[in-house]
Structure formats: C-alpha cells, structure tokens
Image 1 (spheres, rainbow, N blue to C red):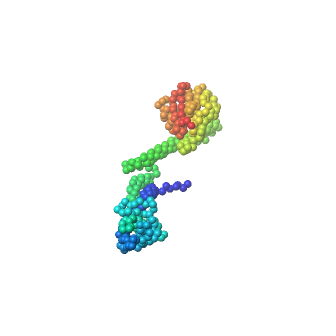
Image 2 (image 1 turned 120 degrees about the vertical axis):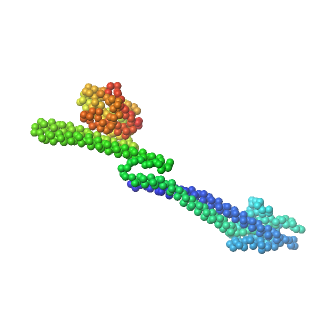
Length: 463
C-alpha cells in the first residue's frame, strides 16, 4: 500500500502565510486605488475650479446680453495631458448657452455644494460625447443694470488622467507591498528552517543508530515543543527494549526447558535400544511416551504464549469480540468434569445467567482451562474445586489444596517459575494466565479462599 505524503512543513507554512498575506494585499490594493482616485480627484478638481473661475472672470454684458471672453489660460493647465480633453459651457441667467459646448451634463439634484473651496461650486461625474467626464458647475453672480442673477459656468474634463494617476498609485502600492510580502516569506522561510534544525538533528541521530541501539534520545538540546515527541520516542523505544529483552529471555529459557527433556528422552531411548528384554523395551517406551506428552504440553504452552502476543495486539487494535463468560465457563466445566472425576475431585460450577465481556474467545478459554487445571493438579483426592462467574465480569477459581504462601504469589506469574522444581510442570500455566489478563486489561488476585486453599479472582472490564 502506498503511503500518502503530507508534503513539506516549510512549504505548507509558506503557502498558508502566502494566502494570509494575499488578503491584506488585496484589501490594501483596493484601498490604494480608491485613495489614489480620491487624491487624483482632489488635484484635478482644484484645476477645474481654477479654469471655471478664469472663465467667470471673463463674463461681461453687451447690449443687454451676457457675453463670455474665454481666456486661453483657462484651458492651458490641461495642455500637458495629451490624452485628456476639456470642455466648457457658459449659460446665462435664463440657462441659455452663451459660449462653449452644448449638452454638458447638468449636476444631479442631490449634488452638494463643495465645502473645500470658497465658491458656489459643485463637482460631479457624468458622461459627454460617449466618454466619462468630471464636471464642475460654478455659479457666478451677475449684477448689471437690467441684469441681476446667477450665471453658470461648467468645465468638464475626461477622466483619462485621473484613472491613469489612480492606476499608477495602485501599481506602485502593489509593487511595494508585493516586494514586502516576498521579503517576509523569505524571512519566514529562513526562520522556519532555523527552527526545524533540531528536527533534522533528531532525524539524523535516529537514522545513524544501529538497529540494536535502543538507548533513549538525549533531551538536552531539544526545545520545549520537541520534548514531548522525544519523550514519546524514548518511551516507545524503552517498551521495545523491554519487549526484546523478554523475548530473548523467553527464547533462552524455552531452549533450556526443551533441551533438558529432549536430552533425557534421547538418552532413555538409547538406553532402551541396548536392552534385550521385551519387558524393558515396553517400560522404556512407556517412559518415552510420558516424556513426549510433557514435551508436547510444553510446546503447546510455548505456542500459547506466542499466540497471546498476537491476540493482545489484535485486542488493542479493536479486534475484541463480545463473549458470554458464563456460557464459556459452563462449556469448559463440562469438558473438564471427566478429568476431575478421574482424579477423585469434585468440580462445581456457580455461574450467573449472563456475564458479557469483550475479549478473544480462544484466550479466555485457555485462561479458564489453565486455572481449573492448576487447581485440579494441586487439590488432593477427595477435595473440591469451585468455578464461579459473577457480575459484572468476575471469574473465580477456588480449591481446598495447600494454597500459595503470600510471599510467593507474585512470582508464580513469572515464566518457568516452579514452586516445586521436581514437579512435572514447566512453570508456564499461571504465566499464561497473567499474559491473558494483561491482554484483556483484567486484574488478577491471589488470596486464601473460604475452603482453605487458593482463591484466584480475575476481574475483567465489563462489556
């Protein structure tokens, strides 16, 4: 299965910062454009008003009619703007055209009078001859004999120069802000690279180690943000080291436990081969069969321990099943009843109706079997063994045998530990029980029971 790459941490950080910087860049660009347009309007409106005043200064009356002498200086300030055009219109007191272009747009009714200049002027945008224009409407008082009122002078200019000025300010702002953003991203790249150097050193330290080097990583040069990661790695490697040590110890003990009975079995068979009496052959074969049974039992127990490790991982990964503990105890009790009867021991079952839990059925079966088999092995003839299943999820096995002294109750869960070294067991029964309890996160307790012997209590997490 191919692994999906999450990409570079530096690249992801820079991309997100670029997006975050693009937002204020866009807002700043829009703001720069409108500020530039406002600055252009303010600059060019002053010139428009000066032209309108120059035209107003040239008004005079002749034969009872208003006349306009438009000086060239009124239009001269716009000569430098080769792309723009200027239009003017002079209207008399009755609104009739006196001079200039007819049809210049009139100010909208809601256009306010400007407060920026001491004049009866209004500035507004309009359209003339198919192009956008900026217009100033100036009211000029006329007081002559027989003529008293307000004349209107309109001066309009195409907005090419204004738009060009606003765009120039916008491009200048974009260039400066873009350069600043690039410099900021470069500085962030350098800062992030410097901040990630401890991770690179950590990677190199892990990569340069030998496969069997499970020493903890040093925390001296780790930053506060990296210390939890390094601590988790050290905790993981410590668990791995302990696991490897347990496996190595288990292999050593298992090889020792297998080597001795195998050597004894081989020696017994070789001794039997030297005999000439059929009766001695038969005796040797019987002893060899018994040794083979013990070896088979030991091998099965070793396989059980290996199977417990795999099942424990499966349970941790969510592979547990719903198990009815009372039903499982009934089935196993019926299966072991003939063995208990053969040994002259009374096997009793006390189980409630339903005791559910989550676990691995085969491991739970083996746990109950080992506990009952251990109790039957240490209970004298005529004794009693009781198998109980209680709510919410408790399993008890009690016998009236000799029990286990309190000082030895912890050691009996060690692998290959035998209270009686001369006994036939391999010291794995209760070790298997302890491993199964660990896999199911169950608590196991050894105590003296009411029958006078050993009471084993296993408390499972309820389903």
